[in-house]
Image 1 (cartoon, rainbow, N blue to C red):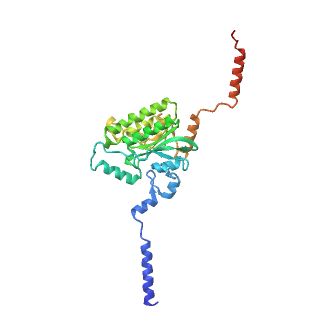
Image 2: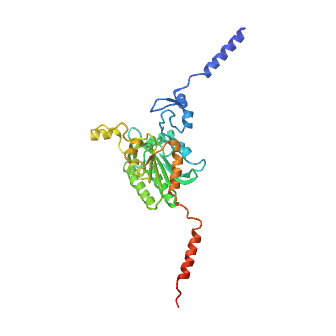
Length: 313
C-alpha cells in the first residue's frame, strides 16, 4: 500500500465515523417514547400505529387535535370552522412573561392558534359537528376564544340539526384572561341548554386530563358522557382536595374507572373502539323511518272515514 492509498483509506474511515455520530437527545426522543405508566420504552412509529396506546399496559397517551381528527373522522371529510380566531390580551396580563409571548410560544409548539379545533365531518358515515380540545396548546385552557368556538359549534349543530361531539382535554379556565374566561362556562352551558331543548344529541368525550372550568361546564353536560381508560377527570386537583378535607383519597380517585363506578360517566371506551361507539350512539338517537306501507294505510283510513261521515243537507 503506497502513501497516497493509505491517506485515502484514512479519509474514508473518517467520513464513515462522522456519518455515524450518536443521536442527539431530541432525535432520540423522536424515535422512542417511554410509557408513563409501565415505563416501557416504545418505538414511536409503532406507538402511533397503535393510536398512541401502550401495547403492554394499555395506557392511553395524550394526543393532539390533529391526531384525534385522523382517528375519529372519516378520511378527507373534516371541514374546520372559525380557524382564524385567536385570543387577544384584554387585561394586558404579565406574570413571568407577557401573555402575548406565551400565546406565540404555545402556537409554535402545538401548531394551532387556539386550544380547540371545531368543525363538521363524518364519523363512520354519520354527519356530526365535532369539537376537539388540544392539551398541547396552553394546557387546553379555556379562554374567551375557546368558549366562543365551542358556542359557535353548538349553534351550528343546532341550526343544521347535527349531532354534537366534543372531546375535552383541559386544565381548566385560562387565568390570563381572568373573569372573561370564567364567563365562557355560562356561555357554553346556555348554548347547550338550547341545543338540548331542541332534542338533539350531544356526546361528551373526556380524555386525559379534563379539569377545572371545562369539567364544570360543557364537558359534563352530555346526553352521553364517555371517558377514555385511565383519564383523570375532576374539578379541583387531588392535592387541593386532600388539603381541604384533611383526608387521604383513594389511589384511583378521579380516574375514569372510579367515576364510572360512582355514576359520574356513562361509559369507559378504549380509543380503538371510540369511533364505532360514537357512530352506534348517533344511529341509536336517530328516529326510525316509518314503514313504507304506512302512507297507504293512512289513505285507506281517511277514505273509510270520509265514507262514514254523513253529508249535510
